[in-house]
Amino acid sequence: MSTKVEIRLAKAEPITWPSLEYRKEITIIQKANVPSVVSQRPTYPSSKSKAIDWDKLESQVKKEEKDEKLDGDAGLNKLFRDIYQNADEDMRRAMTKSFYESNGTVLSTDWKDVGSKKIEGSPPDGMEMKKW
Image (cartoon, rainbow, N blue to C red; front, top):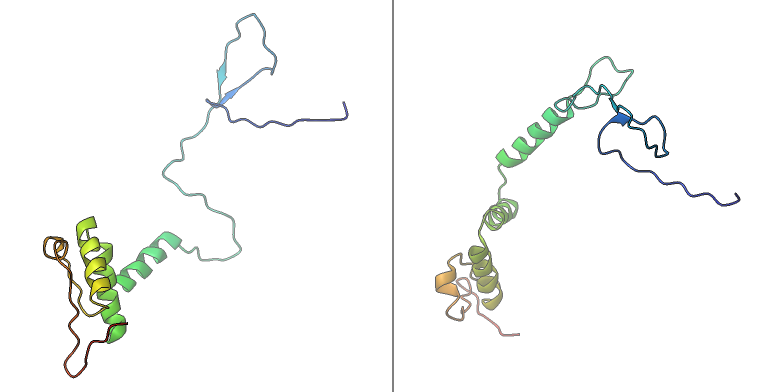
């Protein structure tokens, strides 16, 4: 025919089919011998003499990022980011509400205290609060 349809389906079990057509006689299904390689990751051939374990390298980088000591604004931002990421839903809600209502001058993590009242901003010493 001039038109062609190609359909690819995955087998439910790794067996060999003798044909794609249905036959009334019962045939014995042969199971294929597939080695179980669940725990090993695939390795690819390389011309390099030394193989690099990328999983180990990734875990090292993550550990270094976690143990990294930052100072100044970067350290403070990392502290707030870690607190927010590891917080539950009530703590996140309290942080967002207190920061928004105080125009960025108050950050509270206690939803019981923040949820029931409006948070007033408190400017640093020597500065005054302006409403926009």
